[in-house]
Image 1: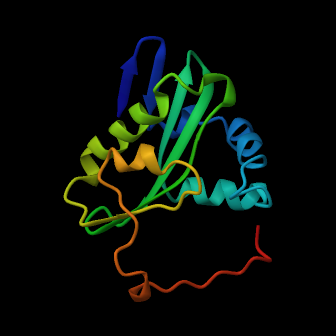
Image 2 (image 1 turned 45 degrees about the vertical axis):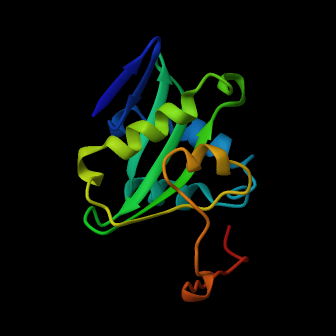
Image 3 (image 1 turned 180 degrees about the horizontal axis):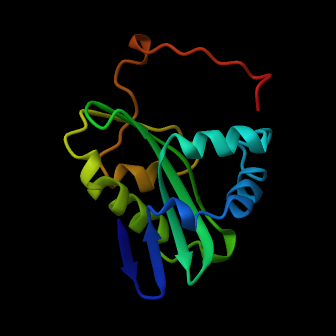
Length: 142
């Protein structure tokens, strides 16, 4: 899939992904700053990826982990600092939510410290009953 808006393109083509740009940004992101490059590469290989480009330069990214039927988890969303405030995050979310392989998903999940208002525009809310949810988290893994 490819989407165009002005001089920007969102693409699912894995050959366009700039792993150096993705790893550089994630090394500065509060949620992924300790991840190993090999783990980032493996996570990208096993996800539906959305790269945002200005020409050939990758300026944003998001990935979705999904069974493409029931559950989808949006992860590692970023827009390069030089391109924020241009509506690219909202456009990225529009493209993710419209992706043909992600229709009929019953439960979408994500985690954020600071982008609640962006995700609310797409129907995301805080979990109603967090006591139902469990997780296993190992902080020693980046």
